[in-house]
Amino acid sequence: MARAIRLLAATSGVLCFVQSAHGADPYSAIRQDIAREIAVGRATGVAVALTQNGKIIWQEGFGWTDKERGRRATPDTPFSLASVTKPFTTTALMVLVAAKKVSLDARANDYLGAAKIRAGVGNPNDVTVRAVASHSSGLPGIFQLFPVGGPRKQPSMDDVIREYGVLVSPPNERYHYSNVGMGIVAHIVSRKSGLDFGEFLHSKVLEPLGLRHSFFDTDLSRRDEMAQRYDDLGNAFPFYVTSTPGTGELYASAHDVARFAMFHLKDHLADQQPILTAQQIDELHHPVIRLLADRSYGVGWMIGHAFDGTTVLYHNGNQAGVVTVMMLLPSRDISCVVLTNQDDDQELVERIRDGAIRTLVPEWSWKSLSPPPSERLPETYRDNWQGRLHDGDKVVPLTLSISEAESTLCIQGQKPEPISGLGLVEGVMQGKTRGDLGLPATKAAKSVGLSLRLQLRGSKLEGEIGAEAPIPHAREPDHLPFWAEFSRVDPNNPDQ
Image 1 (cartoon, rainbow, N blue to C red):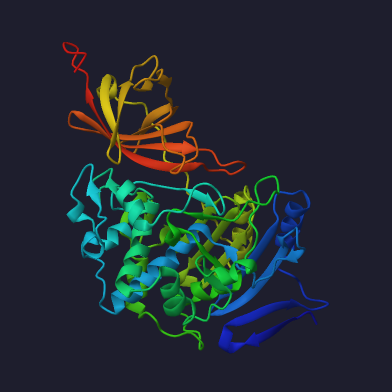
Image 2: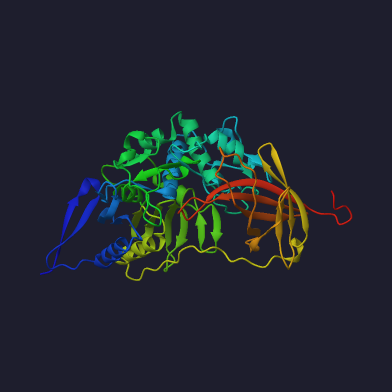
Protein backbone atom coordinates (compact mmCIF):
# COMPACT_ATOMS: atom_id res chain seq x y z
CA MET A 1 0.00 0.00 0.00
CA ALA A 2 1.47 3.32 -1.10
CA ARG A 3 2.19 5.63 1.75
CA ALA A 4 4.40 8.54 2.72
CA ILE A 5 6.37 8.40 5.92
CA ARG A 6 6.21 11.67 7.79
CA LEU A 7 8.65 12.55 10.54
CA LEU A 8 7.26 14.90 13.15
CA ALA A 9 9.31 17.30 15.24
CA ALA A 10 6.51 19.10 17.00
CA THR A 11 8.45 21.75 18.86
CA SER A 12 10.24 22.99 15.76
CA GLY A 13 7.19 22.88 13.54
CA VAL A 14 8.79 20.51 11.03
CA LEU A 15 6.91 17.78 9.23
CA CYS A 16 9.32 16.59 6.54
CA PHE A 17 8.09 14.70 3.52
CA VAL A 18 10.03 11.50 2.87
CA GLN A 19 8.96 9.42 -0.14
CA SER A 20 8.41 5.73 0.46
CA ALA A 21 9.27 3.08 -2.10
CA HIS A 22 5.72 3.05 -3.44
CA GLY A 23 4.55 6.57 -2.60
CA ALA A 24 4.02 9.36 -5.10
CA ASP A 25 6.35 12.34 -4.82
CA PRO A 26 4.34 15.57 -5.27
CA TYR A 27 7.55 17.59 -5.74
CA SER A 28 9.25 15.52 -8.45
CA ALA A 29 8.40 17.94 -11.28
CA ILE A 30 9.74 20.87 -9.25
CA ARG A 31 12.94 18.96 -8.47
CA GLN A 32 13.43 18.15 -12.16
CA ASP A 33 12.88 21.79 -13.14
CA ILE A 34 15.47 22.98 -10.62
CA ALA A 35 17.96 20.32 -11.70
CA ARG A 36 17.61 21.39 -15.35
CA GLU A 37 18.18 25.04 -14.52
CA ILE A 38 21.28 24.23 -12.48
CA ALA A 39 22.62 21.93 -15.20
CA VAL A 40 22.45 24.65 -17.88
CA GLY A 41 23.85 27.35 -15.59
CA ARG A 42 20.72 29.45 -15.11
CA ALA A 43 20.72 28.67 -11.38
CA THR A 44 23.45 27.93 -8.85
CA GLY A 45 21.82 27.25 -5.48
CA VAL A 46 18.16 26.96 -4.50
CA ALA A 47 16.42 26.33 -1.18
CA VAL A 48 12.69 25.76 -0.76
CA ALA A 49 10.34 25.45 2.20
CA LEU A 50 6.58 24.86 2.20
CA THR A 51 4.36 25.04 5.28
CA GLN A 52 0.79 24.07 6.10
CA ASN A 53 -1.10 24.27 9.38
CA GLY A 54 1.96 25.16 11.41
CA LYS A 55 4.26 22.47 9.97
CA ILE A 56 7.04 22.56 7.41
CA ILE A 57 5.86 19.82 5.07
CA TRP A 58 8.68 20.15 2.53
CA GLN A 59 12.12 21.71 2.75
CA GLU A 60 15.05 20.98 0.49
CA GLY A 61 18.25 22.47 -0.91
CA PHE A 62 19.59 22.10 -4.45
CA GLY A 63 22.87 22.93 -6.13
CA TRP A 64 25.62 25.01 -4.65
CA THR A 65 25.93 27.78 -2.10
CA ASP A 66 29.64 28.05 -2.88
CA LYS A 67 30.84 26.35 -6.06
CA GLU A 68 34.45 27.26 -5.45
CA ARG A 69 34.51 25.50 -2.08
CA GLY A 70 32.15 22.67 -3.01
CA ARG A 71 29.44 23.63 -0.49
CA ARG A 72 25.96 22.26 -1.20
CA ALA A 73 22.73 24.15 -0.57
CA THR A 74 20.57 22.86 2.27
CA PRO A 75 17.36 24.11 3.94
CA ASP A 76 19.60 25.49 6.70
CA THR A 77 21.96 27.49 4.46
CA PRO A 78 21.65 31.25 5.11
CA PHE A 79 20.93 32.99 1.80
CA SER A 80 20.93 36.74 1.22
CA LEU A 81 17.25 37.69 1.45
CA ALA A 82 17.50 41.09 -0.26
CA SER A 83 14.13 42.84 0.19
CA VAL A 84 12.53 39.86 1.93
CA THR A 85 14.42 41.50 4.83
CA LYS A 86 11.75 44.23 4.97
CA PRO A 87 9.04 42.22 6.81
CA PHE A 88 11.68 41.31 9.40
CA THR A 89 12.60 44.99 9.77
CA THR A 90 9.00 46.05 10.34
CA THR A 91 8.49 43.16 12.76
CA ALA A 92 11.40 44.59 14.77
CA LEU A 93 9.72 48.00 14.57
CA MET A 94 6.46 46.55 15.87
CA VAL A 95 8.30 45.07 18.87
CA LEU A 96 9.17 48.66 19.84
CA VAL A 97 5.59 49.76 19.15
CA ALA A 98 4.41 46.98 21.49
CA ALA A 99 6.82 48.28 24.13
CA LYS A 100 5.35 51.79 23.63
CA LYS A 101 8.74 53.19 22.61
CA VAL A 102 7.53 54.09 19.11
CA SER A 103 4.15 55.02 17.66
CA LEU A 104 3.36 54.16 14.05
CA ASP A 105 1.42 57.39 13.68
CA ALA A 106 4.02 59.69 15.21
CA ARG A 107 6.16 61.91 13.00
CA ALA A 108 9.20 60.01 11.78
CA ASN A 109 11.36 63.09 12.32
CA ASP A 110 10.54 62.98 16.04
CA TYR A 111 12.64 59.80 16.28
CA LEU A 112 15.55 60.99 14.15
CA GLY A 113 18.67 62.89 15.16
CA ALA A 114 20.19 65.94 13.51
CA ALA A 115 19.60 64.46 10.04
CA LYS A 116 15.89 64.93 9.29
CA ILE A 117 13.49 64.29 6.43
CA ARG A 118 13.01 67.55 4.54
CA ALA A 119 10.77 68.78 1.75
CA GLY A 120 11.27 69.19 -1.92
CA VAL A 121 7.48 69.12 -2.01
CA GLY A 122 4.94 68.46 0.73
CA ASN A 123 5.34 68.76 4.50
CA PRO A 124 7.90 66.60 6.37
CA ASN A 125 5.72 66.83 9.48
CA ASP A 126 3.14 64.70 7.66
CA VAL A 127 5.60 61.81 7.29
CA THR A 128 4.73 59.24 9.93
CA VAL A 129 6.57 56.10 10.93
CA ARG A 130 3.78 54.13 9.25
CA ALA A 131 4.40 56.06 6.03
CA VAL A 132 8.14 55.36 5.89
CA ALA A 133 7.40 51.69 6.64
CA SER A 134 4.87 51.43 3.78
CA HIS A 135 6.55 53.29 0.89
CA SER A 136 3.93 56.05 1.14
CA SER A 137 6.13 58.77 2.65
CA GLY A 138 7.04 60.52 -0.61
CA LEU A 139 10.73 59.71 -0.14
CA PRO A 140 12.69 58.58 -3.22
CA GLY A 141 14.09 55.22 -4.19
CA ILE A 142 17.78 54.43 -3.71
CA PHE A 143 20.00 51.44 -4.35
CA GLN A 144 23.77 51.38 -3.87
CA LEU A 145 26.21 48.49 -3.65
CA PHE A 146 29.55 48.84 -1.88
CA PRO A 147 31.93 45.94 -2.55
CA VAL A 148 33.93 45.38 0.63
CA GLY A 149 37.51 46.48 0.06
CA GLY A 150 36.48 48.77 -2.80
CA PRO A 151 37.16 52.51 -3.08
CA ARG A 152 33.69 53.57 -1.93
CA LYS A 153 32.67 53.17 1.71
CA GLN A 154 29.23 52.42 3.09
CA PRO A 155 27.68 55.66 4.42
CA SER A 156 25.97 56.00 7.77
CA MET A 157 22.18 56.23 7.76
CA ASP A 158 22.48 59.83 8.97
CA ASP A 159 24.54 60.56 5.84
CA VAL A 160 21.92 58.86 3.64
CA ILE A 161 19.15 60.97 5.21
CA ARG A 162 21.17 64.17 4.78
CA GLU A 163 21.87 63.37 1.13
CA TYR A 164 18.63 61.75 -0.03
CA GLY A 165 15.99 62.28 2.66
CA VAL A 166 14.07 64.76 0.49
CA LEU A 167 10.38 64.37 -0.29
CA VAL A 168 9.84 64.02 -4.04
CA SER A 169 6.06 63.71 -3.69
CA PRO A 170 3.67 64.72 -0.89
CA PRO A 171 3.28 62.18 1.93
CA ASN A 172 0.50 59.61 1.48
CA GLU A 173 -0.19 60.69 -2.12
CA ARG A 174 1.14 57.58 -3.85
CA TYR A 175 3.15 54.39 -3.45
CA HIS A 176 6.81 54.87 -4.33
CA TYR A 177 9.18 52.07 -3.34
CA SER A 178 11.78 53.74 -1.14
CA ASN A 179 14.80 52.14 0.44
CA VAL A 180 15.47 55.55 1.98
CA GLY A 181 12.19 55.22 3.88
CA MET A 182 12.68 51.62 4.97
CA GLY A 183 16.28 52.43 5.89
CA ILE A 184 14.87 55.12 8.19
CA VAL A 185 12.67 52.45 9.83
CA ALA A 186 15.75 50.42 10.79
CA HIS A 187 17.48 53.63 11.91
CA ILE A 188 14.54 54.46 14.20
CA VAL A 189 14.69 50.95 15.67
CA SER A 190 18.38 51.43 16.40
CA ARG A 191 17.97 54.91 17.90
CA LYS A 192 15.01 54.03 20.12
CA SER A 193 16.44 50.72 21.32
CA GLY A 194 19.96 52.03 21.87
CA LEU A 195 21.33 49.03 19.96
CA ASP A 196 22.82 48.43 16.56
CA PHE A 197 19.90 47.37 14.35
CA GLY A 198 21.41 43.93 13.77
CA GLU A 199 21.80 43.38 17.52
CA PHE A 200 18.19 44.35 18.17
CA LEU A 201 16.91 42.19 15.32
CA HIS A 202 18.87 39.20 16.66
CA SER A 203 17.89 39.59 20.31
CA LYS A 204 14.24 40.61 19.86
CA VAL A 205 13.15 38.81 16.68
CA LEU A 206 15.50 36.11 15.39
CA GLU A 207 16.39 34.51 18.72
CA PRO A 208 12.88 34.57 20.27
CA LEU A 209 11.46 33.00 17.11
CA GLY A 210 14.11 30.27 17.08
CA LEU A 211 15.74 31.37 13.83
CA ARG A 212 19.17 29.89 14.46
CA HIS A 213 20.36 29.96 10.86
CA SER A 214 19.76 33.68 10.40
CA PHE A 215 21.95 36.71 11.02
CA PHE A 216 22.25 40.35 10.07
CA ASP A 217 25.10 41.63 7.97
CA THR A 218 26.85 43.28 10.93
CA ASP A 219 27.44 39.86 12.54
CA LEU A 220 30.86 39.50 10.91
CA SER A 221 31.57 36.19 12.64
CA ARG A 222 28.88 34.43 10.58
CA ARG A 223 29.46 35.78 7.08
CA ASP A 224 31.32 32.62 6.12
CA GLU A 225 28.06 30.65 6.52
CA MET A 226 26.16 32.57 3.84
CA ALA A 227 25.51 31.43 0.30
CA GLN A 228 27.87 33.06 -2.17
CA ARG A 229 26.10 35.36 -4.66
CA TYR A 230 26.59 34.78 -8.42
CA ASP A 231 25.96 36.86 -11.51
CA ASP A 232 23.96 35.70 -14.53
CA LEU A 233 27.06 34.02 -15.99
CA GLY A 234 27.71 32.06 -12.80
CA ASN A 235 30.64 34.21 -11.65
CA ALA A 236 30.88 35.02 -7.95
CA PHE A 237 30.08 38.58 -6.94
CA PRO A 238 32.52 40.12 -4.46
CA PHE A 239 30.93 40.46 -1.03
CA TYR A 240 29.02 43.74 -0.85
CA VAL A 241 26.91 45.84 1.48
CA THR A 242 24.35 48.54 0.63
CA SER A 243 23.63 52.11 1.66
CA THR A 244 20.47 51.04 3.55
CA PRO A 245 21.27 47.81 5.45
CA GLY A 246 17.87 47.50 7.13
CA THR A 247 16.21 47.14 3.73
CA GLY A 248 18.02 44.04 2.52
CA GLU A 249 20.98 42.75 4.52
CA LEU A 250 19.48 39.85 6.46
CA TYR A 251 20.79 36.36 5.73
CA ALA A 252 18.47 33.49 6.58
CA SER A 253 17.78 29.89 5.67
CA ALA A 254 14.63 28.68 3.94
CA HIS A 255 13.83 26.77 7.14
CA ASP A 256 14.05 29.94 9.23
CA VAL A 257 12.09 32.11 6.80
CA ALA A 258 9.37 29.43 6.87
CA ARG A 259 9.31 29.62 10.68
CA PHE A 260 9.05 33.41 10.45
CA ALA A 261 6.16 32.99 7.99
CA MET A 262 4.39 30.62 10.38
CA PHE A 263 4.75 33.21 13.15
CA HIS A 264 2.98 35.72 10.91
CA LEU A 265 0.32 33.10 10.16
CA LYS A 266 -0.22 32.91 13.95
CA ASP A 267 0.63 29.22 14.06
CA HIS A 268 1.98 29.54 17.62
CA LEU A 269 4.94 27.16 17.45
CA ALA A 270 5.74 25.80 20.89
CA ASP A 271 9.36 26.98 20.83
CA GLN A 272 8.59 30.52 19.62
CA GLN A 273 8.07 33.39 22.02
CA PRO A 274 4.96 35.56 21.47
CA ILE A 275 6.89 38.72 20.63
CA LEU A 276 3.74 40.29 19.13
CA THR A 277 0.03 39.86 19.76
CA ALA A 278 -2.35 38.76 17.01
CA GLN A 279 -3.62 42.35 16.76
CA GLN A 280 -0.08 43.71 16.34
CA ILE A 281 0.64 41.17 13.60
CA ASP A 282 -2.61 42.17 11.88
CA GLU A 283 -1.54 45.82 11.93
CA LEU A 284 1.58 44.94 9.95
CA HIS A 285 -0.60 43.17 7.37
CA HIS A 286 -3.20 45.94 7.06
CA PRO A 287 -3.12 47.83 3.72
CA VAL A 288 -1.73 51.36 3.95
CA ILE A 289 -1.26 52.47 0.34
CA ARG A 290 -2.63 51.17 -2.97
CA LEU A 291 -0.23 50.08 -5.72
CA LEU A 292 -2.67 48.90 -8.38
CA ALA A 293 -6.32 47.89 -8.39
CA ASP A 294 -5.58 44.55 -6.71
CA ARG A 295 -2.35 45.29 -4.82
CA SER A 296 -1.50 47.27 -1.70
CA TYR A 297 1.42 47.66 0.66
CA GLY A 298 1.07 47.33 4.40
CA VAL A 299 3.77 47.84 7.03
CA GLY A 300 6.57 45.94 5.33
CA TRP A 301 4.29 43.54 3.44
CA MET A 302 2.91 43.40 -0.10
CA ILE A 303 -0.78 42.52 -0.13
CA GLY A 304 -2.63 40.96 -3.04
CA HIS A 305 -5.52 38.63 -3.76
CA ALA A 306 -5.48 35.08 -5.07
CA PHE A 307 -7.61 33.60 -7.85
CA ASP A 308 -10.45 33.07 -5.35
CA GLY A 309 -10.26 36.56 -3.86
CA THR A 310 -8.54 35.55 -0.64
CA THR A 311 -5.71 37.68 0.76
CA VAL A 312 -2.09 36.89 -0.08
CA LEU A 313 0.79 38.40 1.90
CA TYR A 314 4.22 38.34 0.32
CA HIS A 315 7.52 40.02 -0.37
CA ASN A 316 10.04 39.54 -3.15
CA GLY A 317 13.77 40.18 -3.04
CA ASN A 318 15.90 41.12 -6.05
CA GLN A 319 19.43 42.45 -6.09
CA ALA A 320 22.84 41.45 -7.45
CA GLY A 321 23.07 37.67 -7.12
CA VAL A 322 19.76 37.28 -5.27
CA VAL A 323 16.18 36.37 -6.18
CA THR A 324 13.89 35.42 -3.28
CA VAL A 325 10.23 35.22 -2.33
CA MET A 326 8.16 34.61 0.80
CA MET A 327 4.42 34.14 0.22
CA LEU A 328 1.67 33.55 2.79
CA LEU A 329 -1.92 32.41 2.21
CA PRO A 330 -3.48 33.23 5.61
CA SER A 331 -6.95 31.80 4.95
CA ARG A 332 -5.40 28.42 4.08
CA ASP A 333 -2.56 28.58 6.67
CA ILE A 334 0.01 27.96 3.92
CA SER A 335 3.33 29.63 3.20
CA CYS A 336 6.06 29.10 0.61
CA VAL A 337 9.68 30.29 0.64
CA VAL A 338 12.09 30.15 -2.30
CA LEU A 339 15.68 31.42 -2.01
CA THR A 340 18.27 31.54 -4.80
CA ASN A 341 21.78 32.94 -5.16
CA GLN A 342 22.12 33.82 -8.84
CA ASP A 343 20.92 36.69 -11.03
CA ASP A 344 18.24 35.98 -13.62
CA ASP A 345 16.39 33.38 -11.52
CA GLN A 346 13.06 35.24 -11.36
CA GLU A 347 11.08 32.93 -13.65
CA LEU A 348 12.44 29.84 -11.89
CA VAL A 349 11.54 31.25 -8.47
CA GLU A 350 7.98 31.91 -9.62
CA ARG A 351 7.62 28.42 -11.11
CA ILE A 352 8.88 26.82 -7.89
CA ARG A 353 6.58 28.97 -5.75
CA ASP A 354 3.50 28.25 -7.83
CA GLY A 355 4.33 24.57 -8.28
CA ALA A 356 4.82 24.08 -4.55
CA ILE A 357 1.57 25.85 -3.65
CA ARG A 358 -0.31 23.78 -6.26
CA THR A 359 0.65 20.59 -4.41
CA LEU A 360 -1.71 21.90 -1.70
CA VAL A 361 -4.08 24.08 -3.75
CA PRO A 362 -4.36 22.48 -7.22
CA GLU A 363 -6.37 25.37 -8.67
CA TRP A 364 -3.78 27.96 -7.53
CA SER A 365 -2.91 30.77 -9.93
CA TRP A 366 -1.11 34.03 -9.34
CA LYS A 367 -0.41 36.99 -11.58
CA SER A 368 2.92 38.59 -10.76
CA LEU A 369 2.97 42.34 -10.44
CA SER A 370 3.53 44.06 -13.79
CA PRO A 371 4.55 47.69 -14.27
CA PRO A 372 1.55 49.96 -14.91
CA PRO A 373 1.17 51.05 -18.54
CA SER A 374 2.78 54.20 -19.89
CA GLU A 375 0.38 56.67 -21.50
CA ARG A 376 1.02 59.42 -24.02
CA LEU A 377 2.01 62.73 -22.42
CA PRO A 378 -0.76 65.35 -22.39
CA GLU A 379 -0.16 68.58 -24.29
CA THR A 380 0.29 70.46 -21.01
CA TYR A 381 3.73 68.81 -20.62
CA ARG A 382 4.93 69.78 -24.11
CA ASP A 383 7.05 72.88 -23.60
CA ASN A 384 10.56 74.12 -22.87
CA TRP A 385 11.52 73.98 -19.21
CA GLN A 386 14.37 75.46 -17.20
CA GLY A 387 15.26 73.67 -14.00
CA ARG A 388 17.64 72.75 -11.22
CA LEU A 389 18.76 69.47 -9.71
CA HIS A 390 19.77 69.60 -6.04
CA ASP A 391 22.72 67.48 -4.90
CA GLY A 392 23.15 68.57 -1.30
CA ASP A 393 24.45 72.16 -1.46
CA LYS A 394 25.32 71.78 -5.14
CA VAL A 395 22.80 72.96 -7.75
CA VAL A 396 22.99 71.58 -11.30
CA PRO A 397 21.22 73.70 -13.97
CA LEU A 398 19.11 71.70 -16.45
CA THR A 399 17.08 72.36 -19.58
CA LEU A 400 14.20 70.09 -20.53
CA SER A 401 12.55 70.21 -23.93
CA ILE A 402 9.38 68.18 -24.49
CA SER A 403 7.84 68.04 -27.96
CA GLU A 404 5.94 65.66 -30.22
CA ALA A 405 9.01 65.10 -32.41
CA GLU A 406 11.73 64.64 -29.78
CA SER A 407 12.28 65.30 -26.09
CA THR A 408 15.69 66.07 -24.60
CA LEU A 409 17.37 66.83 -21.29
CA CYS A 410 20.48 68.99 -21.19
CA ILE A 411 22.83 69.36 -18.23
CA GLN A 412 24.54 72.75 -18.32
CA GLY A 413 27.81 72.50 -20.24
CA GLN A 414 26.83 69.22 -21.93
CA LYS A 415 24.96 68.41 -25.12
CA PRO A 416 21.20 67.72 -25.08
CA GLU A 417 20.43 64.01 -24.78
CA PRO A 418 17.26 62.36 -26.12
CA ILE A 419 14.78 60.96 -23.62
CA SER A 420 13.53 57.45 -24.37
CA GLY A 421 10.30 55.85 -23.20
CA LEU A 422 8.83 59.19 -22.17
CA GLY A 423 5.26 58.80 -20.98
CA LEU A 424 2.83 59.27 -18.13
CA VAL A 425 2.67 56.40 -15.63
CA GLU A 426 -0.11 56.82 -13.06
CA GLY A 427 0.21 60.60 -13.24
CA VAL A 428 4.02 60.70 -13.15
CA MET A 429 6.14 61.56 -16.20
CA GLN A 430 8.80 58.89 -16.61
CA GLY A 431 11.64 58.43 -19.07
CA LYS A 432 15.31 57.51 -19.50
CA THR A 433 18.22 59.58 -20.76
CA ARG A 434 21.97 60.09 -20.31
CA GLY A 435 24.18 62.67 -18.67
CA ASP A 436 27.00 63.18 -16.20
CA LEU A 437 26.03 64.88 -12.95
CA GLY A 438 29.66 65.08 -11.90
CA LEU A 439 29.18 62.94 -8.81
CA PRO A 440 32.39 62.35 -6.84
CA ALA A 441 33.91 58.88 -7.03
CA THR A 442 33.36 58.50 -3.28
CA LYS A 443 29.59 58.75 -3.84
CA ALA A 444 29.06 56.61 -6.94
CA ALA A 445 30.67 54.88 -9.84
CA LYS A 446 30.51 57.07 -12.95
CA SER A 447 26.84 57.37 -13.85
CA VAL A 448 25.88 57.12 -17.49
CA GLY A 449 22.10 56.91 -17.17
CA LEU A 450 19.45 59.21 -15.77
CA SER A 451 15.87 58.24 -14.92
CA LEU A 452 13.12 60.86 -14.71
CA ARG A 453 10.09 60.75 -12.38
CA LEU A 454 8.50 64.19 -12.58
CA GLN A 455 4.98 65.40 -11.90
CA LEU A 456 3.19 68.51 -13.13
CA ARG A 457 1.96 70.52 -10.13
CA GLY A 458 0.43 73.82 -11.17
CA SER A 459 3.05 75.59 -13.28
CA LYS A 460 5.94 73.47 -11.96
CA LEU A 461 7.34 70.15 -13.13
CA GLU A 462 9.05 68.54 -10.16
CA GLY A 463 10.14 65.27 -8.62
CA GLU A 464 13.05 62.86 -8.80
CA ILE A 465 15.91 62.44 -11.25
CA GLY A 466 17.96 59.33 -10.56
CA ALA A 467 21.60 58.86 -11.51
CA GLU A 468 22.20 55.26 -12.57
CA ALA A 469 25.56 53.50 -12.74
CA PRO A 470 25.67 49.94 -14.12
CA ILE A 471 26.93 47.09 -11.94
CA PRO A 472 28.83 44.52 -14.03
CA HIS A 473 26.59 41.50 -14.82
CA ALA A 474 23.87 42.69 -12.41
CA ARG A 475 20.29 43.23 -13.57
CA GLU A 476 19.81 46.55 -11.80
CA PRO A 477 22.17 49.54 -11.64
CA ASP A 478 23.11 51.65 -8.66
CA HIS A 479 20.45 54.35 -8.36
CA LEU A 480 20.97 57.68 -6.57
CA PRO A 481 17.92 60.00 -6.37
CA PHE A 482 17.97 63.80 -6.53
CA TRP A 483 15.23 66.40 -6.16
CA ALA A 484 14.66 68.40 -9.34
CA GLU A 485 12.28 71.23 -10.22
CA PHE A 486 11.46 72.92 -13.52
CA SER A 487 9.58 76.05 -14.61
CA ARG A 488 8.33 76.83 -18.11
CA VAL A 489 10.62 79.00 -20.21
CA ASP A 490 9.00 82.36 -20.92
CA PRO A 491 9.28 82.79 -24.73
CA ASN A 492 9.59 86.54 -24.15
CA ASN A 493 12.46 86.01 -21.72
CA PRO A 494 14.39 82.90 -22.84
CA ASP A 495 17.39 83.85 -20.68
CA GLN A 496 15.38 83.79 -17.45
